Amino acid sequence: MKTAVIICNGEFPRKEYPRLLIKEADHIICCDAALQTYLRHCNTIFGKVREPDIVIGDMDSLSLSLREKYKDRIIHDTDQETNDQTKAFNLVISRFRDLDAIHIIGAIGKRVDHSIGNLSLLMEYARNYDLEGMGISVDMVYDYGSAFAITGSMELHCGKGRKISLFSPDNSLRIRSSGLEWPTDNVVFDNWWKATLNRSTEDIVRLELSHRSIALILID
Image 1: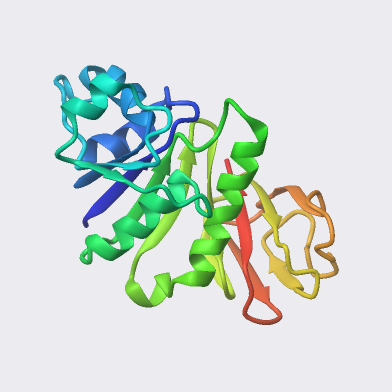
Image 2: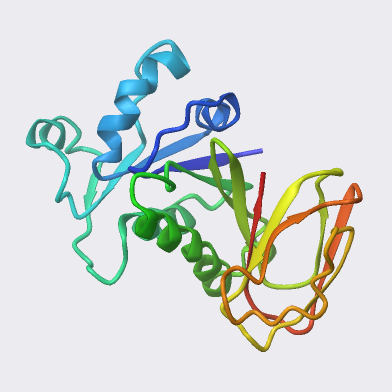
């Protein structure tokens, strides 16, 4: 299984699982100044410095010394219509064709607006790419959970007692559920809180979407 990790400049993880994803990644891509944070934690994760494969962004927050040192792997992208996370994601999709998974690390924390925006972009990626057809799973992993987007009905093999929240920008979408403490069948997705703070009551949670759309799942 081949994986790529995109490291953003939010809160760098302290817990074992997200750090393990970094350690086992085949490709590491840093977003702009996230390079500085990543380098500070390299020795703890790898026992040595492991150079990132690529550093991408508008380079508005990366020090001149690091820009010079890593100039051979920096991609300077000044597009203001996309953030550095999206620049990195689009690059990974186009360059690394044999991936099974993309994990986005460090996208949460420091600023609430950045966190919300970065989470919502998971739905954009699912809408813009046929990730299922490409055989690539994409998630955002942080110290207290993970998030991923769906575009159709699915089964979530999560185990009992997991905290689960659902979001969608599509207020015409209905999601029938089984295995949740509070069924979502009648939820109208016209505000962010509407299907949050739920809990799995079965090992498998089943979600049936009324039509192909986009939704975001957060799980602890």
